[in-house]
Image 1 (cartoon, rainbow, N blue to C red):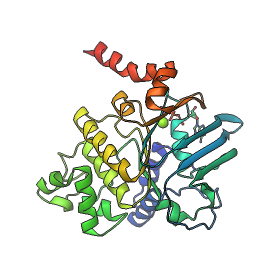
Image 2 (tube, rainbow, N blue to C red):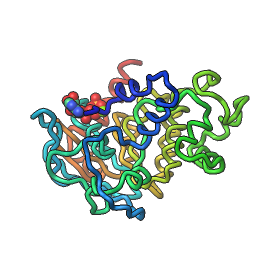
Image 3 (cartoon, rainbow, N blue to C red):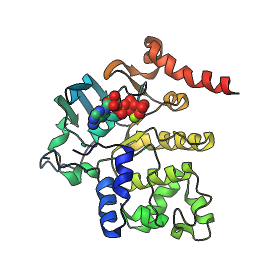
Image 4 (tube, helix red, strand yellow):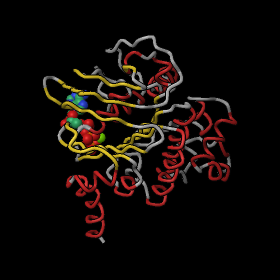
Length: 291
Ligand SMILES: Nc1ncnc2c1ncn2[C@@H]1O[C@H](COP(=O)(O)OP(=O)(O)OP(=O)(O)O)[C@@H](O)[C@H]1O
Ligand SMILES: [Mg+2]
């Protein structure tokens, strides 16, 4: 079984053979790195993006990672999963990519079991971005062409996330090779490019796991406004440790040791959950301490 961690993904990419490497990259972008699951043949492409976890249990080697987890995630909203390290946040995202099969319960999208969708329909409706900017050592254009080679579409998504003008200011524009010719491409800009690529898939559902980690506050604000724009026609599910990201969430799911400890509208959860208040305030405390 392939355990989907950033390290594994990096290892998969660390291949000399270009052809094999391209195949791996496509596999990763299609989010189908495991053969342990048989998928169904439902190919309804008109997905509104309602996600539901119903009494989901997920065990690995007898150890409970998720314990009776139930929640709903709504279209046209920013939904945040928060919790301490190891509480199971990324596991929820990985299950939604169908990397692993749950032990019991069900995960539904638009009331259909996620494992019943075909691979291609699933990949074109569920997309996302990882914690570390996943851009490859090829031109900006080629990075985007991995999902859609139509240049007009590429420019459109880059404008939407606000990096088009920056790309055009580079001497080679969209032909700039990342890694070799991009001394000015920050982590944040790479992350915006990864978001643009995810948008090219036209997926309704966007999964973002800690995408503003190690990103400066200016780009974090940029990403914040991108998410607020994207929610107008997507379902957004994000994992975050950053209070300013939590603030823009419409709904919050608080996880503690694999269980949902609180969920609901952001303000309500803030009133009810001391753990959520701790997570929202922690960052400011540590930031002011370090000043
Ligand atoms: N495939 C797996 N095999 C073994 N253990 C796993 C697997 N997936 C997750 N875990 C364990 O499940 C727990 C939850 O991990 P997860 O990565 O979901 O936490 P997280 O909330 O995302 O943490 P962080 O904030 O540090 O990213 C951890 O104890 C982790 O070690
Ligand atoms: Mg995580």
